[in-house]
Image 1 (cartoon, protein in one colour):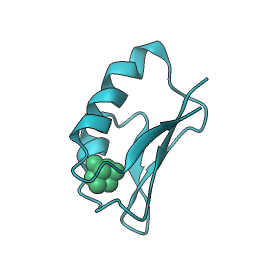
Image 2 (cartoon, rainbow, N blue to C red):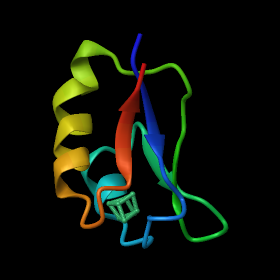
Image 3 (cartoon, rainbow, N blue to C red):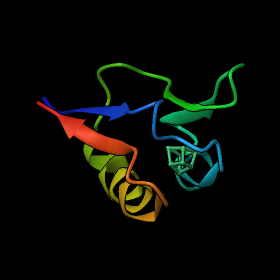
Image 4 (cartoon, rainbow, N blue to C red):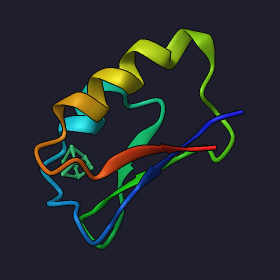
Length: 65
Ligand code: SF4
């Protein structure tokens, strides 16, 4: 199963991914996005996750096998 990961070194904390897919992304205390559930990537959320990946201004979100 694919996992979604956020590269905190790239993340700007803009909140776009959280707005697009709040089931998966949230902003942590450090002001950076993080993945809420580690093993997600359900069919239902696939499109939202893909949108977030494409919408991130710094390409901080990616899939990890
Ligand atoms: Fe960070 Fe990208 Fe999400 Fe913005 S869209 S909060 S830069 S991971």
